[in-house]
Amino acid sequence: MVHLFAEGRPRVAPGGTRRGQLREKGALMDAEIGSRVRELRLWRGLNMRTAADLSGISHGYLGQIERGEKPVNNRQVLEALANAFRVAPSELTRKPDITATSSESHDAAAVLADLLGGWWVGEVPAAPGRPLPEVLADLAAFHASRNKSGKHGAGNYPTQVAKLAPLIRDLLAAAADPATSRQALAPLLTAYHVAGSVAARLRAPGLPSMAAERMQQVANELDDPVWQSVAGWGRAHFISSSNRLRQYELAAAVADTAPPERMETRGMANLTAALAAAAQGQNDVAETHLREATAIAEQIEPDVSPWPSGIMQFGRTNAGIFRVSIGVELGEGPRIAELASAVHPETISSGRQASFWTDLGRGLLESRQHRDEGVAAILKAEKLAPQQVHDNWFVRQAVGAHLGQTRQDSTGRELRGLAWRMGLATTG
Image (cartoon, rainbow, N blue to C red):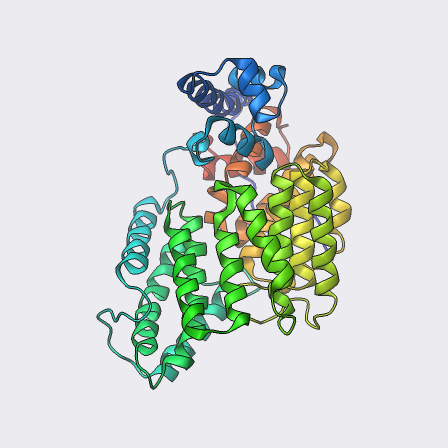
């Protein structure tokens, strides 16, 4: 059960004109994306009215965004604008990487690009050729660490890549050996999925889709409908914001056709389809898939299924987390606290817990009366997965929008400290 409370040591901010400076910082963030929206609109040769019609938002709202008077704080608006200008959403949110591990993240993305692009299934990279049982034991330990339900998981993304890359090389070698191929292929598919997930977190264009291609290659070698469906879901999952319509089509197809003996795939495909529908403003469709996923989750004994190792985490907990996330996308605001009250996030990995607290915090921040609870939720997410939270565009928007509204109390100090750690304020 969820309990909201503020955690962490307050960072005391200097007085004077600080609040005004923070208000200006939040306004600057809005102005930056507003300027980018206007730049892309003019580049496409669109007037304000046409751009508003194409994006499905009002002419007045678009004007407020361009003038920096309103933030872009949900997927639906961000992706609608990107679609109107025929660019990737990242073109609207691009910013210098200000994380403390920016050079390490760049190096990690380069390792993944070399690994995913350099070898196909059946090809053998230079690998030490370790015994397969040893490799599988190390992969199982990696998955367990990454999916650990505490804050001490597999580490940040560069650390995960450093652990994962040699495992994929070893599994490729084993998959090319007729004596070990059948044992190595399914674990290799799960390792490729993790590679795609980390690449997406590192904002490495093209690499998640390349990981999905490798998953499909493995599934083809296995020639098993169960793993074919897992690969199909992985493809839909990694399309994400680049094409929500196609993501929905692919996920819905898997939800309809995945073999019933592994209901986890059908469940996750329904959750992916629900998020894709919500991002397009299709509330009823999203709700239909959420209900289907929830019903499937009730048929699975654990709150979080251990199958397949390390990549889905389907069950009642994840279905509840998706419901909260989609509630935020659909603008349900503080009502998501009711949805969150039935979720037991402590039963799932630290990364998924962080996603839960992040989205809950964003939703609560929409209401002045729930600001303290919203800040507390985001701080919980930060403790669990700091890099994941600091790099989240929507969290950055939410924190920036509230900087100028903070009071000189403990919550205000916590929010300013968070802003400082995210690079949104010059001091904590």
